[in-house]
Amino acid sequence: MEKQSDLGFHAYIRGIILIGFALLMLAFIITGNITYYIAPTMMPFIYFATGVFLLLGVIQIIRSTVKGQEEEQLCDCGTDHNVSGSPITKLLIYSIFVTPIILGFVLPDKLLDSSVAANRGIQYGSGILAEQTRNESTKEEASSRAEAFLNDPDAYYEQLETGSKANDEEHITVDEYYTEEGFNQYYEELAEEILTEDRIVVTEENYLDMMTMLDLQLERFIGKPIEIVGFVYREPEFEDDQLVVARFGMTCCVADASVYGTMVTTDEASQFENDTWVRVTGILDQTEFNDFRIPLIQLREIEIVEQPESPYVFPRFSF
Image (cartoon, rainbow, N blue to C red; front, side):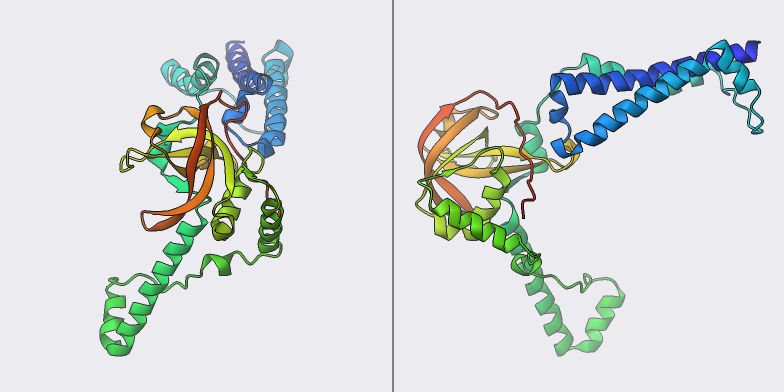
C-alpha cells in the first residue's frame, strides 16, 4: 500500500506540472504576450503543445487515483515504476520543472530592447550587402592563396599541412547566392511598384521586404521620401547627429531575433534616448558605416509614438 501511495503521489505531481505548463502557455496565448517569444508561424505548434501537455497532465492525475495505481501494479512490463532517490533529490528534480512555471506567471513579459541589440549587434538594412562584402573579401583571400601556390607550391602545401592556412572552401557573391527562382523577380517587381508611389512607407508587414529591396536596389530610390517606425538605438561610435531607427526581426523565436536598423542623421538626435519609439519621415540617401554602404535617412520630421501592438517584424517569404 505504501508503494502504491508513493507512485500515486508522484503521478499526481507530474500531472500538476504538465497542466501548469499548459496553463502557462494558455495564459500567454490569451494575453497575446506569446508574440514576445515566438513568431506567428509557430503558433500551430504552441496550440498543439498546449493540448498535449493538458492531455498528458490529465492522464497523470488519473494514474494517481487508487484505480490507476492498481492498474500500474498489474503491469507486466518487468519495469520497476517506483521513483528512486532521496527526498531531497526528488525535490530538486521537481523544482527544475516547477520553477519555470512559477517565474512564467510572476515575472513581467519584457520586450527585447537596445541592451539586447548592443550584445547581438545590428544589421543595417537587411544585412545582405554586409554579407556580400564579407564574401568578396574571402574571395580576395582565396586569390592570394592561389598566388602563393603559384609562387612556391612546396611551401604552400607545407603551410596547409601545419594548419596555418584556412580551408579552401569556395565562396560566392550575394548575387550568385540569391538565384533561387522567384527571388530576384519578386524584389524587382516590388521595386517597380514602390517607384510608382509618392513615398516609401515601411510597415510592420513589409519591413524586411523593404530593407532587402533597398539593399539590392538602393540607387534607384535615392532622393525618395520615406516613412518608418522603430525604436531609437545608438552605437558607441556614433556621431552626435546619428541614430538608428530599428526593429527586431524574428523568424522562429527570440533565440534567432536580429536587429535591423536604418541610419538617420539629424541635429536633434541627442534629444531621443535609446528604446524611444519614433516615427521618422525624411529623404532616402546612402552613406558608409564600417566600410559598408548603407541606407541613410536625411530627417525631415520625427515624432515620439506608442510602442506598436506587434513590436517585432517577421519575414513573409513572399517570393
